[in-house]
Image (cartoon, rainbow, N blue to C red; front, side, top):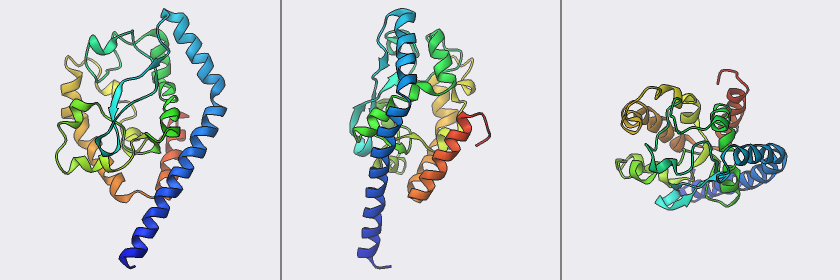
Length: 213
């Protein structure tokens, strides 16, 4: 394969991925709209605070963006504790505990996908302090759009449980979870393809449904 053919194939893959992201996010938002409305109402009724959490994350090329998530913690939770969250974090609300256990809090990220800030599949976006600690090799993950799901997300599906009881969740995250999570993310970036994305999406649905990924 010549260099020109390789670049053309890569360009087509990127275009196919973006078209898929647009269609999937638009259709997904329509299909889950009743769930979105029900969760939004439950959050509002619980404490009267904002429905969405709009924290800043680092996206493709190191560009910051504001992520959409259903708020699963008390108002101003970022000012009251660590960025990483354990399963027994006292900042998690009653509604929040439920939607986090079912990954429903991630559904609003379909808006980020629609806006082009994220992809359906890609390395999970990180907060700036964690990205600042990336090595030069690890920064390869910033060459693609971050995603809602990826192999690392599936492997660490119970991340909150792994951090349960931690006195310093951020420190424990970087020491116990980050190395393997980054290895899996880099492996995805190097091997990414449209067919791989479809496999990851199917595994994600299977995982959410309670079956082994």
